[in-house]
Length: 158
Image (cartoon, rainbow, N blue to C red; front, side, top):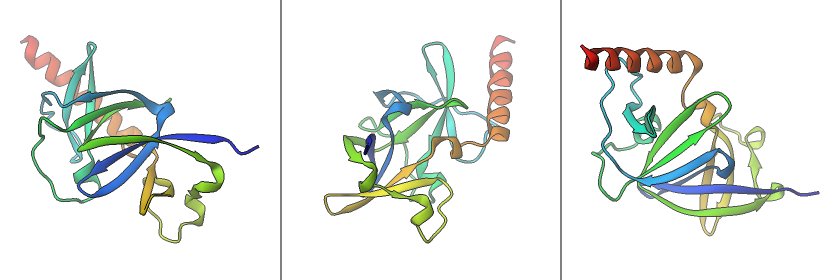
């Protein structure tokens, strides 16, 4: 039986990307991002989400797109997997796409190796890349981020 995949489609500049809806906890409007010294280059900082400090992934930096400051109209996708929770800073969340397995091209069929991509699909006249959240932050980077957050919290207490 052909399973239905639910994907959250979001935009960075004119490009479309997607992550599995099952990984998305919440989508919120932009809020203050607290800088996080010693974090990996593609981590803009953290947000305090319900008492937990979550790393904010700067997708522009990660995908080597033109960088800019966060705007009030930007959105934050709070997402997670079994391995980690993180926040994706995006220009806008466009829609939820419902696709069968046949409508998705698996990463094994893509000629070029895009490290974060697990597949792609066509939405209207655009190609949308589906991303693997676990590849946005490595286990080593998670440890580094947690250490940086602990250091920052300790500094605030002193």
